[in-house]
Image (tube, rainbow, N blue to C red; front, top):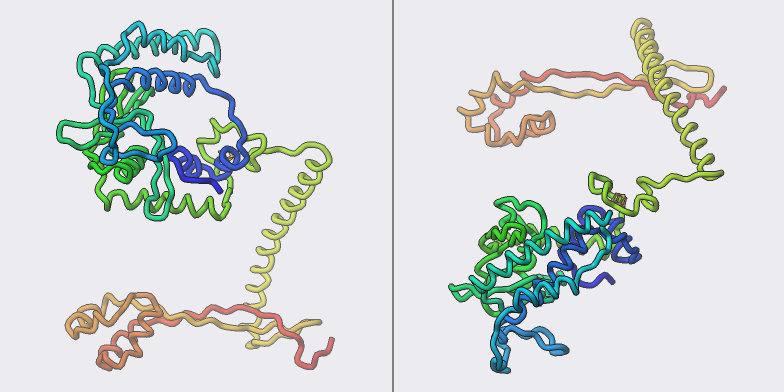
Length: 397
Ligand code: SF4
């Protein structure tokens, strides 16, 4: 029903299954946000900028599925492979620019300047140190041991060692030094590339566009990928089961569905009044329950004292008979006999120090009787008395 899992779909479900339903099943739109628009525009310009450098052998062909490097048969097309000029790139920036989602003209202007600055720096760097991309904005699909996945990968480069490097552009303010190593997004891309290309993945890189600083990591080993596969499996199972419970947390602050989420929704009018009356009644009963519990314990204790004093275990009332019952528990303090257990080799037969394990040990014919006796002598018997109500024996009033 939901199709293959993307990284963002997986993350959304993990955070809150109900929000996932609003987005992916009900297809409710969210208000555009300036920083998302900004990221989209920058990605679009970078795609235009880098696509001419793509090794032709990596290109994919419409309607023919995903063409791997090994499968490409076309031979290199004619023509130079050079990025657009700075002017062409800035023209592409203007063409792609969108005002959607910014809070104010000032905010939009700040982002626009920032975008221009980082693109100019990127262009300079690209001309000076051209990468060797084999794909840009590549959509890949795969089945990862029973779980269908997909993703759009910003860039896949060929590295000097001959393998492939996955590059993900980040327009965010900061990147932590270990962010690439801990990134499940990059790990998912690694799996997608490994299942679509016959060449090994040699590196995972987050490219921080504001500083052009790459944050690199080695690809994850198969055992290191297992926890991610297990988490994806849980998400896929939850989606299959249509388990859409709201899961509130700090992320709710940026959720636009609060007004329709049971965790935040409020009901006004007669329905609201009906609910409020039920809450009040529930609260009163809870208080009553607490008071009754206290009164019950007090009465049972008084009954216990009186029955003890008068030596009776069955006390008729006007409609029922209160029967005094007992529960016996044994407790053992093994410290005193531990050396004996060790020296006799019986310690290994004691599965634990809880009363049940010790009682089992005491019945174990493989343990010498003298040792069992010593252990039994460390026991103390605890009796708990309680009352049960039974019908009167003659069935009378
Ligand atoms: S408000 Fe919170 S709990 Fe409700 S759907 Fe949004 S993220 Fe989930």
